[in-house]
Image (cartoon, rainbow, N blue to C red; front, side, top):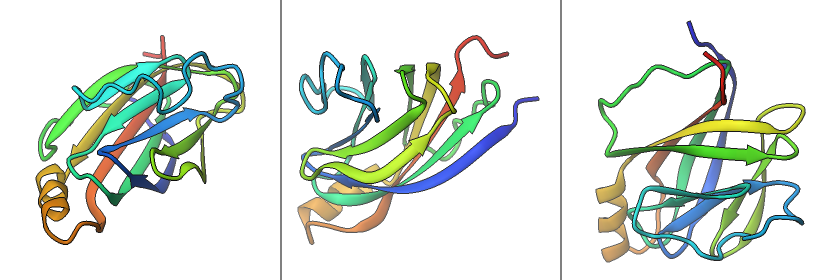
Length: 155
């Protein structure tokens, strides 16, 4: 049975309905965040980069990141939206990015070295974040994400 190897909670400052996770050693990325951001899906990927759309325009989302030793069980209940994709990391470290503020201080450690990963993003609070954007404008922790990584090819 798959097991969680590590958990980390970070805050993601959402701007223009978006934030991203990008390879920490990003100097050689062909398309750095937020270039070519696709807003038509919960997640989209570029080499070394994972783009995530939000229900709200400007707010701070709570992001729980889990690294698993194999594919985690599916849990579709209780989430507004889910998506999966592939992610490549040269260093095993991922930085959180905002369209407003750029790279944040938060770094997520996937592994001690680089590798190929599968990632699942689950989100709740999208409608509440959208309503907040229509009213007060900003908020903290209204929209929540669970981002699960596991090495490609692991059982």
